[in-house]
Length: 323
Ligand code: BTN
Image (cartoon, rainbow, N blue to C red):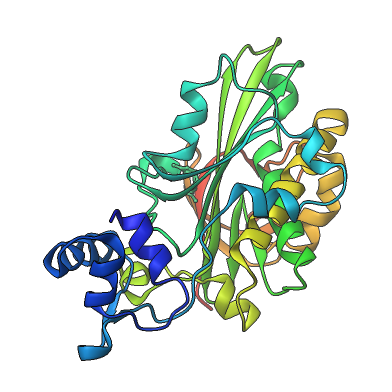
């Protein structure tokens, strides 16, 4: 029995005895125990309930490409390239990077778990199986990097559109593209570009969306984090959430290709968590404090300095100052 089969056997959230699991898989209870330990080491909180056996603290729906496809809005599936669900990849974004030459436009790759999930600025994105969503999408553009300013901010609004379509409110955007709630980070966006400055180019858009965080994951995250289960009260089906994300990206990235950042600017401004807030910035322009003043047409952060000057910031670490 592989970790995926064990997770599937425990997916209902009911306890299953070691003996039953061993019988089903035709292996020893010791071998089952070893697989339980493997899942635990990957961050899945498998509980041991004495004679009752092993259980998960909540039911889990494993990702399934056919179910995601079935939950897409009419016409969306036909616009996609590949739609793949893998059990394990090093990173869904690395997988698309490796296949950049041949993968069709709007190919979507999801994985239950990543062994080398990547965040921005070289950080690791912890990716245990069965809990969250790890998805990357390939979008090709003809106009070159020059036309892609604001893309990563637009992707943040696409994630919010997906969440909003599930009837879940309460998330906003921290420039450039973190999706946050009052409790912490709900989703991260990593956009990687390759190709030519003024010719054909490609963006691999990677999204990690927290659906269900464990205490251990929160502790390891290195910053306050939040999950959709907390925000929604009850977690929608994981395949439905994945479908909404796929649809929002497919629609949004095509819209961005035709019209650039402009149609996303109003959405961004409505969800801008930095506007009017006292900020600390550190980056190429040094360390300084200022008040958030929205974003410009290219997606640069606008801040107002104490002397009234309005400054545009293209790249910086930004934190909100405590009152
Ligand atoms: C961030 O640091 O906020 C960005 C995190 C992006 C994580 C996602 S998970 C799917 C895709 N694959 C990766 O390795 N990274 C992105």
